[in-house]
Length: 190
Ligand SMILES: [Zn+2]
Image: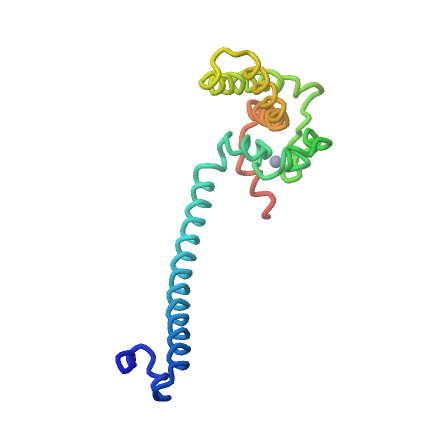
């Protein structure tokens, strides 16, 4: 027991007490791990904070202002702050296609002219074709030209992705006609 004096000197106050020896040893080990974990947590927190700030920097410097940002985040093409759609959830089947008439931030007219978004159907066809080809290539790898798995998987995936493709197509289409203007995105903060 004497050898352990340096580990937990407090225990030595009670001579030949094995209960306290074990007890103190456990307390000591728990304390040691608590310190280790708190150090680790601090380090992890620092790493996490750094990653988050890098990520937000990356989003800020690479993202905003580009057409890709507006399309992927479904934001107004002019100010890139207002939402293009009323709901964020593409699988809210009653609402996924509903758009406000105007941007809530900069007032950009989303309707533009009647039938404006008919053009988005061309984009939608193009996207759907790309998806079908990708799915076919994957299925072909496993089943070859077997028609049943090819058709079932292509149809299922196109149906599942329909709301996302629909919204992305509209975002691409309106971005063809409207450019980002930072003057409008500042409006909100004034
Ligand atoms: Zn806007």
